[in-house]
Image (cartoon, rainbow, N blue to C red; front, side, top):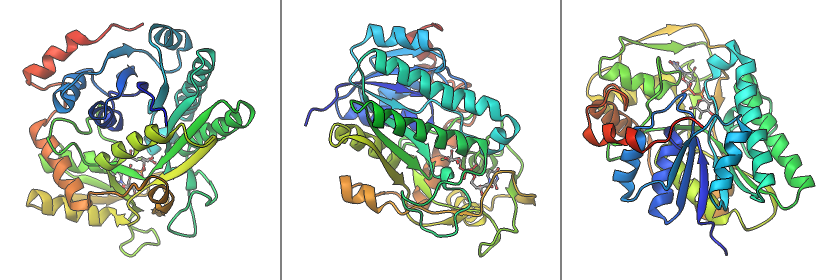
Length: 359
Ligand code: UFG
């Protein structure tokens, strides 16, 4: 088996991207990161280096839709494979601005595919989402469960999967692994890396963390009238460290087989919003204040994974439970109350100097 050594990571400064960079660096990969920092900070790179013990080889400030700038990145480095994280990911925002979601998520993916094709790079690990299953009637969800996206974010990811499948069918030199994440949360156990969204968090876990440290007053629970035991939405939360480990395995195995292969990445157990609120309260030692509001447009009642395929294929099993997810998310938030941007950490401040200006 040939292991790709130089990997372009799009969205490598983001939440899942940064944790995956650490995992890949720890396993000997050379990394070229492409990011536009629209929901991330270049300050993360010094922390990646500190955590992994070695740096990312190069960082390029590029909008994923800009195929000319992307092309220059592939001109400058000899690239073996790509991990494509760069995308927008908030369900609510996607219902307010669907065009932006298709433009970034679908347009970004086609730009990347064109550049890969032009440069003879054919191995891709793609960030897909459990949200493509939509309002499913049977849990847990398997990879062959029908896709019925209920919002533009989910539809944009499903559109990308269909494009990738066509590309693999008609250009058989392409090999794609599409990983359908359920709900990645938590943070690196060191507290150096975590989720640092810009503005008000769109997702549940970072919102809980900000309420826990007093940065926000109270959580808004979106709906308690779903057909679930406590009426709130059920999701399959998975620790970001487990997701990062799965990406490393995906890169190790992307050369095997042909065409497009799809894997669910979830823990296989469902947690309701109120159960997660209680677990977070237990982690921080005091109850988290919340108020129930109406449902969020585009949301579904429950999404729980059957991840047995990836376990069978690569021996991947999630190692962390919900208590560890809450503990690690809380640790990151306590150590970095205002995220990376306002951090007084001198290592973080120095990182600005490493980063290249927009292409
Ligand atoms: N929720 C709240 N209050 C909030 C935010 C969320 O009650 O402030 C509820 C939602 O209604 C849902 C659950 O918490 O029932 C989880 O919502 P998230 O926004 O955290 O996550 P989603 O299930 O919407 O999943 C989306 C994408 C996934 C992605 C995940 C985390 O569909 O692909 O965000 O980024 F993995």
